[in-house]
Length: 150
Image 1 (tube, helix red, strand yellow):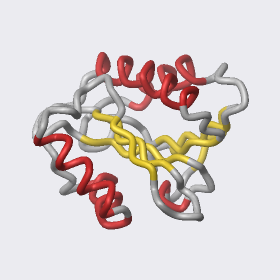
Image 2 (cartoon, rainbow, N blue to C red):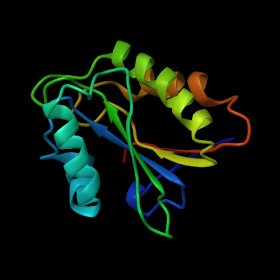
Image 3 (tube, rainbow, N blue to C red):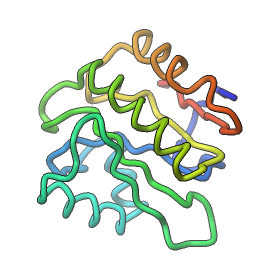
Image 4 (cartoon, rainbow, N blue to C red):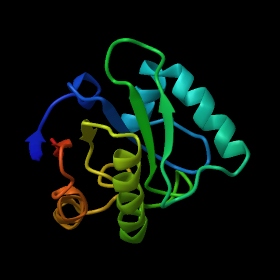
């Protein structure tokens, strides 16, 4: 089930939050910076994984939060390779396929998703939105919260 939202994704009532990242280990601007400040353990794990080449476009880098409160999972979604470069629709498509697999594998019942690649990545929301819908709309039993651009 897809729901559309506005506001602060970090405050979403969801078991998992999707963090748009690059593959270089930098979270210096935008929503990624907010994630860095809110979830420092996720940032440390992500940075280390980037140093070892484990964060790649098309593949989620997921951390489990050691807390009783939600979110339980932070799903780092690489929307670009270098932080200076733009996002590419092919990376969004590849990533959405992997995100779908991660949601099913971990039996995540609710996830909050930002406008992937549309902020600092420079992609057009009108091109990204239907890709998210097509990839996740029929995911049975999972509540999909899509945060639209302000």
